[in-house]
Amino acid sequence: MKLMPSILEMDFGEVEKRICRFIKEYVENAGADGIVLGLSGGVDSAIAAALASLAVGGENVLALMLPEKETNKQKDLDDAIAIADQFHIQTQLCDITETLNGIYKSIPAFDHANRLCRGNIKARTRMIFIYYYANNQNRIVCGTSDKSETMMGYFTKWGDMAADITPNIDLYKSQVRKLALHLGIPKVLALKPATPALWPEQLAESELEIKYETLDLILYGLERFMKPQEIAEELEIEQGAVDRIKARWLANEHKRRLPLSPKLGFRTVGNDFRLPRHTY
Image 1 (cartoon, one colour):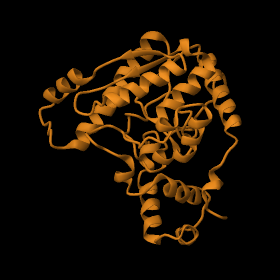
Image 2 (cartoon, one colour):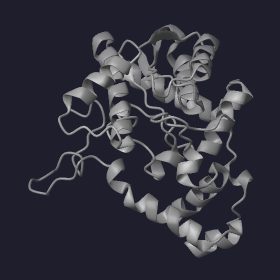
Image 3 (cartoon, helix red, strand yellow):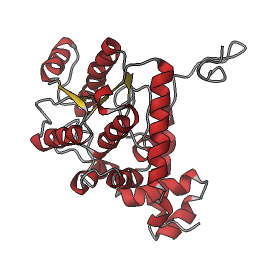
C-alpha cells in the first residue's frame, strides 16, 4: 500500500450526500425539532454546521458561540458568524466566563495553575450549555470531532465528544479540510490551524508534535493493520514517530468507549446489548 496524500481522496459529493442523509434520518427518527452544536470558528465545527444546515435547513440548526475571557479571539467569533451567515444558521452567543469563574471558586481544591484540569472544565461547561438548549428546544446535539483527533484521544472525555451524533468522526482532518472546500467554506478557514481553545495560544499540531498531513497517513496505515516499520518506510520517517502515534492511539482507547462493566447478565448494556432504533 502506497501511503501518499492521494490515498485520502474521496468523492466528497457522495460524502456530503451520505452525511446529510444520516443527519436528516436521525433527526426525523428521534422526533426532534432540529440540531444544536457549538460553532467555534474552526473547520471541524464549520463543516458540521454546514452539513446540518444542508440536511435539515438552516432555520432548524442552532449554533452556540461560547467564548470565554481567557481564550477569546475576535477572529474566531467572526469566522463562526461568517459560517452561520453563509449557511443561514440560527445563532446564540453565550459568554461562559462567569460560569467558569463560579465553578473554579466552588471547587475547594481548585488549582488554577493546572491548565489541563482547567481546560477540561471549559470543554465540559461548553457541553452543559449545548445540552441545555438541546433539552429545552427538543434538539439533537451534533458533535464536531474528526477521526484524527478521536483516534489520538485529543479531546476531553464528556466534553467536546459528548454528543448524540458525530457526522465528522470517520473523516481524517485532511479529509475534513477538503470537504470544507467542497462545501464552499472559505479556504482561509478550511486551512486554519486547529485549536481546542482551552488555554491561550494552544495549537493542536504543536501538542500532537506532528503535522496532520503526516499524522493522517500514519493513522490510515494503522487502521489497515500496517506495521509501524512499514509505515515509517513508506513515509520516509523515523519508526519512533510511528511507534509514538500508535502508543498514544492505543493508550486512549478508554476515552472512546462507554464505561466498562463486569459481565454478569445474559446481555450487558453497551457491550452485547445495543439496540437499533425501533427494534422492539
